[in-house]
Image 1 (cartoon, each protein chain N blue to C red):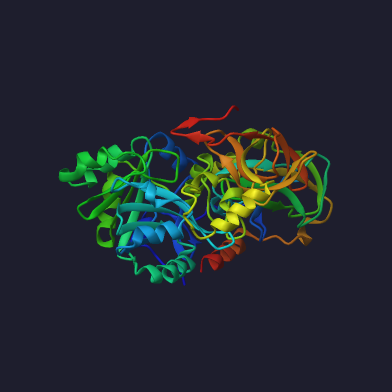
Image 2 (image 1 turned 90 degrees about the vertical axis):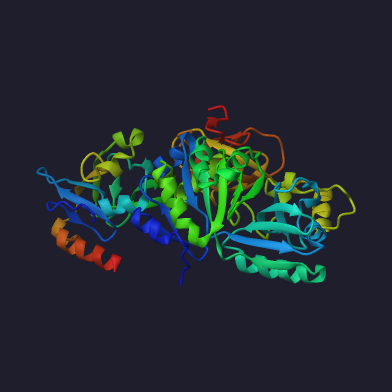
Length: 131
Length: 363
């Protein structure tokens, strides 16, 4: 059973997104995603000010098993990256919704038009994957 | 439809993440793969390797048959129980599989071959055994648990009946013996000391439970892969296959050229290849910076040519990324690897990377 905070939104690629008060969004990968990947050993982060396109490659997370792309859930500009992941990629395993955040993006489009799921919708998708 | 080993229920109870491996539903990790890796390096871990194919060969001409079938020479085995690592080649010198052969008598040997290559291996062995009147008996009635680590033998010893326990603990590396219904071999695929224990299917669950109670950590295929990579042991299908010879797979040492009149399958092709020269070689790579080397990535050697990583990954012991790569002939110490379009510096290092818990390369 994966942990899943109720105040976040989710993508079909297993990223989570939190709307911040300043209009930016913080993005990471879900508990389900980190469990699938196994122990994280390396994270390739985007540059600050880099422009991202929704569903385009944003970062790469590498576990002991494999490399996996992380996709931008929305279009926008990178305003912050979690440099702590360089030395401590495992915080994605231990705290995927907290210390394991990956980037903060200033969205260029209206968020309500983005393809995002509520916690219930994401849970339903996971249930279907398990079935 | 995947097959299940007799320990499948034990893996489920232990919370294993399962994966299809060569047609078998096998545990890839139970909890943290890194913890499993360190358990083997520092104490003891166990692997269900019951998916591997055990084949007993018997008949008067078995030794003669194996001297024809295998690139290494079983005539080197003189003490009963002694084991030998060998490649089984096709006529063009490509590797059909790598295996361990155990010697008991010139009329009695045991082979342990890979699970993913079972069908073609058995077909090949049977096809050639016919002419030698050798009986080929696949032992689907047997399970196998590999117990590996500096404390592995001590922790596993209580499994062995007292009658044979002292003898089992006295086994030399790459040697095996029967201990009642158990077959104990001081072999493994991790670069650590330990045993591979073959037993009747019906005894496996109790043995697993006993090892668990003794503090031996269940380990999955994930840790098995990082451990064997640190030990620079080849993985069939990654580091070699039917398209390459052992001479270009870092396995030239397993080819027994002497005596010159032993006409094993693939010999003529290997001799022609060796005579032609310019063979690619397999080297160890250490990534200088951050990132992870993976199989299939291109290796670029300035002024020499290009090669390819055959196995790569993160080394939990060294805490850097390491790889095995097939590269062009020549003397050089540095190369670059193309990781997702970025060229990263790697150093060529002597393998193994890690052996018996110790890092063997200059960091």
